[in-house]
Image 1: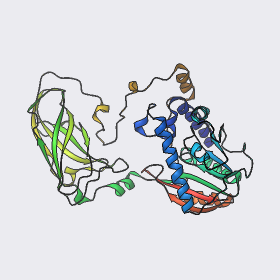
Image 2: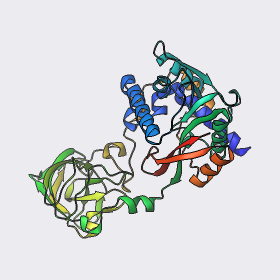
Image 3: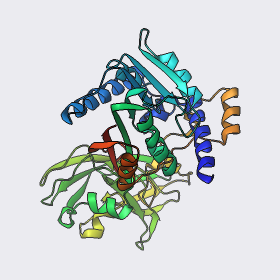
Image 4: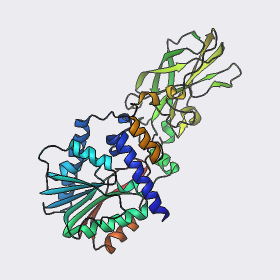
Length: 402
């Protein structure tokens, strides 16, 4: 009962997402939060996903009849519409009525689709053996594991004999230790030469400035630009007092502009903010691999310059302006005031449903999934390591035949 109660809470959560930011609720790119998805780009991503899926099915020799298709957790129809091009009729089903309403609004004329709301932890509204392909992606990962297992069994019940069942769900959540082990630079990679380029001699108290730092990779390891799981490499700074104590810890951040090969040099601008109190400070800059280590902790030398901070104290900027916290964890980049204000009705609905919508993630271990497939009368054709849930998760797309 507890898990069923949790399922109801999640249903209300997705209703709220459908009311406030439906496209972000379907495809949660943080740069698109607050209604910033361009609909053409959003739906184009769905067509690309389905094209890749069909290639994967062909590679697995997973043929299917082009009759009826069920897209479970359809959201606003991002995948349902392109799936419908391969079938005579396609049904999108979702727990959130606002998502279904948005799907109807965005559905192109003449599309062979229908969209229905289903707020139950089963699919009994659909008859046995009624679909030639059952599909689900980026859905089961947000549902409690025992409810997901029940849905997987339902997928096989509603699939026609010989039909396909294709669904994605994470099998494992990597620990921080595992992520660090997978993505940390090797020890010899933490070797850099850093130097200031024309640093300022003075700054007003609390003033913002941009300093340029020339950094050279003195290791034999290329520093990657795009490292998953938040383990990217940045330039950062601290402000030190004359006695060596830190007046300001983790002031600014600047990410590498591209991969830096051994021996390569690049000038990188770094935004900083002077301490609040006037005085003589040492501005120290260093490279950091987030959630792993500062380069100086691995034997590399930071760069430092003396700067006189003058004038009266000014309040420091909020953490959001700094980019990352002292622990290296990302800080929210979008102020609440910058987001579009929902209508009164939507704000009331959000209050009734329990506040700001959130994303929950759940896993179903692969052995549990495979047992459920077998007990439901299915045969696993292929499990594809898809990286669909992001770098913190081991995720599979299971291609099955009933």
